[in-house]
Image 1 (cartoon, protein in one colour):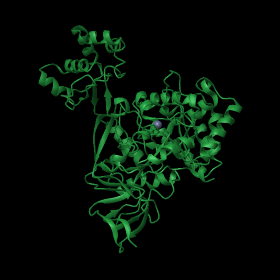
Image 2 (spheres, protein in one colour; image 1 turned 60 degrees about the vertical axis):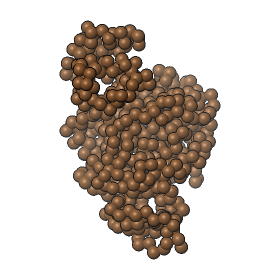
Image 3 (spheres, helix red, strand yellow; image 1 turned 180 degrees about the vertical axis):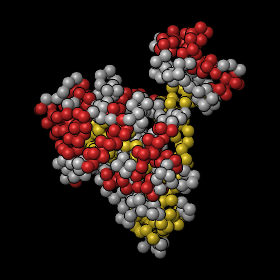
Image 4 (cartoon, helix red, strand yellow; image 1 turned 90 degrees about the vertical axis):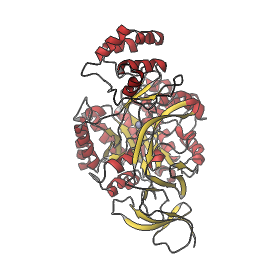
Length: 562
Ligand SMILES: [Zn+2]
């Protein structure tokens, strides 16, 4: 028999953590049909000598629910070797929704996850409906495998309307929500997601619906997952930043027990405000594991640079002169920023050692906004100041004014030795999941979708071997999230594959692109070193170019088969 595609001479890292081996990998249709030394003829042969062939990466924490409507590849995740994304995290989904609530949900999502409301309005034709309707409309266009959670805030809004953003639920409302969740799971949802962070404010100034849920509601909804096999549960507790309070710990363990599956928690990081909380969280996860409950926080391999514009930033809010200027109305603000005396007071503010003080030698001009000239974009403020023969701080203010305060600057994040050490410990802990991309969200403040490339290029061979790092991005996630026949290079599995040169893997600088609906922009990071990405046997990306193949599948959870 002739096979469709042979990837020949590759070094295979199969996603299990096992040592690499050399083999030809044959693909026919959407499946891997042989791994070895292929004797049968192939319609197309891809020479892969010197390259690593691995399962496509699985990103379990994304918010591509909206973006996939107009950008079906889920970039920039897809640029970084990702072939499967799980959407609808943190309780924020657009389905199920009553038609009259769909706009409210879209605006809430755009507010809490930092997406342009205009882009969502122009780029999506979603007018409400069931979970199954949402995903079956999306399915034929997908350029990547994708599936979704049912979001707590969506089902709460559906059942309680406005009251969802005001109060606890009654027993009747809880059972109605449980029914809606059950129905969505039968229609293919992968599981249930929720969050209770106080910082999650909706567009209407109120906290998001899930924040008003009491423990009994969360446990009752988790219990619906217990009716099915192969479910996933994701949650961000209220006291995440404090290493989880005793009440939250009880809630987390209670939800996981009711659901009968593991519970995935938000990303741990060494927080300047609470430098021990990451360790307390890890200790808690291990204690729970000892009691037979699998609690999985995530670790972040990515780095978040800081982006800011004087029209919108809150970074300087602790400095009195800055606060005075940056809370003034636009016209007054620009007048003050031109005034030499005010400038002197602002500059004096920055001498405060606790202040956010950009270093002008590395702080870069990112974007001049729609009204400004792009001429100096990419240069550091110090360089531009030297060219103009002025003081860097004045130059920063001038550039801000020239872009009508929409001028965006970027300060690269320098990690402290303590941060790096804590990251290393988290990455080494097999209980922690690789994740934290928030892909599709926070489009103007940072890019997290590069984490697979970071993990493979910056955290191997020390502390992780390449095989271990690939396992964390593939087999580990497929197993944990019950994703069938994916996550490993195996005969009979779907041909989700990524071919890369480990010595050339690198992440580009964050850059703005204005390619979203309604002329809105987003930050992306390029990837280097990937030769080819394949989704379900079809090449979706080759030498850094998308092929446009709508090769993705809608991933349905265990309920769909029940
Ligand atoms: Zn999230």
